[in-house]
Length: 323
Image (tube, rainbow, N blue to C red; front, side, top):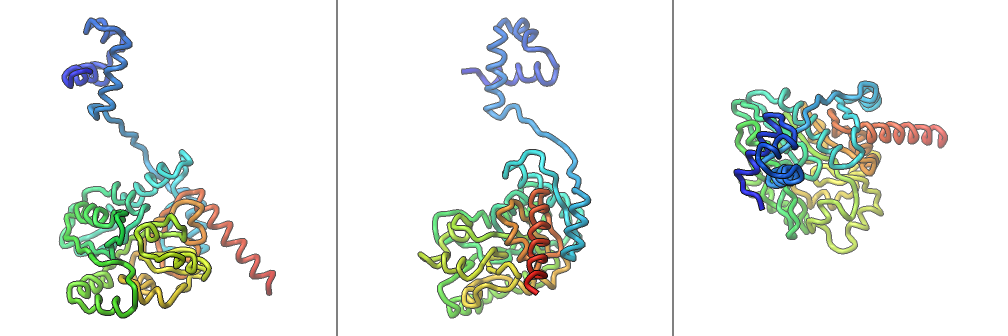
């Protein structure tokens, strides 16, 4: 309807020269409503974009409570400005991206998992020139359905941000039997990636929660009724595709033997074991991850942090009553 030249000209007059719409209408010999429509078109076409820049500061009292209750090395609690999932994840992802910008040094090896939360963190990574940094996948990434896990995109974004080499674990994360898993792990290429993941001094991962809408379930890793059985066994969440209960213990040894990637106990050895978890539906999963000692650095939002602290205190009170 409008030419690109028209949209650029009107946008520059309005946003850069700061003329009013009425002044532009008079200058261009068009109506003021037409100016408004041209500006809308420029926005739709991506000629005009907006960016809201603001500092992200942790909610100190919640940060301190999380650190003291769970023995965390670091906690970052993002204030909730707009209580909608996408806005919250974007802010927590941005905070994690800024933290990694300062944390990563020459020679570091960064292990990354995949999932919705980590997608937001990957989007907000800053280009950070470092020497001899490696980025490696911590768990298998090949989906068994057309559903995309986004794993390779996350790995690539991390590698590009730190000007580093990426190492993909291009196998399914869960296979049909322990025998198949053992055979895959014997492959020299797979074995090398797993070994590199163990060597990583920084691990960055999301905390998944048991839901039929989880990435792992949608990606086709579970047969009919298998996921229901997992929930019945007490699984509350997963890290790197390995499921655990609310007390932090592994949920299903057989499933764990069929899973390809870093073991949960190996996360305890990391200098920086960094988790991102947002949403009150993830409270039980996050609590289990913290009780298991798999996390020493947590990035979350204030609503999740409050619910997590409340759940922790309620559980402690219940234990006292049982005694």
